[in-house]
Length: 331
Image 1 (cartoon, rainbow, N blue to C red):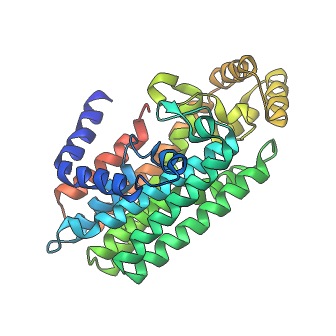
Image 2: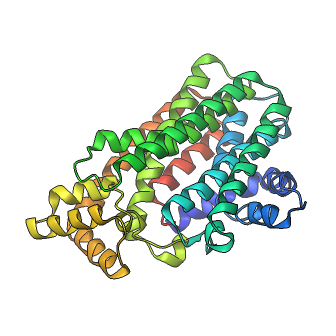
Image 3: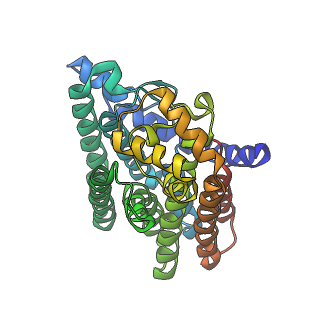
């Protein structure tokens, strides 16, 4: 894992100039204007984060392009990171999350009202960048991804506490909440790079499948990671009654007594830290983490296969490395 993470860091170093430009555009996209409380709240989570979405967009662009400068896609790469930031601010309001990226969430620091408006402001700045860039196809792809994000959030809310939720419904939720934006990143990169239809479709599927595997791994980390490394509290999903892939399998695999305990907690939706620890112990006593890991690896392996249509290049290799990281990441 350490060697793989070093490889991922080397990918980021190869794009050091571009990542620095994205960071600069990100900071400039949220000006220091009155009212200060709104803009301070909006900037709060701009720093930090893996930047995996803009990097995916840049790599997809490079993988099919040999003529255009990477700076051509920086506004769109910045926009997708802003959209991701806005969604996690709104997500933290709904989940009443206390920490994100190792710091207090916007809703804890400034309250739900300001957090809601800050997320809206960031969305508006993202779409300003997309509109200024002017590519209609990209605008349509990103707009559709945001629609799917909203649908996924509502579906998740509808099924919170639902102990009878199926794995199919879970997949329907995460393909909207997570995979939609991953897919938009790789598809937009391929479009802007002038890729052929086969390349655009392959990179689109790569992003989609990678996004599903990435979210499954995220759900595993919620029950099996360290809080300091993860940068946010663990056990949030079970504590809030969200039946993830791991939890759904644990409901089938646990003995009757433990199953009843998990069901009661999912119904409760607001559980104490002691209850959460009890639930995590039950989940870890089953083979649910191994089962979910196997399923996540299947999606990620399928994602890597989609890259077969691309010519060999450093960007293609980097996309493969990111998939490997998604399958085995610890944070």
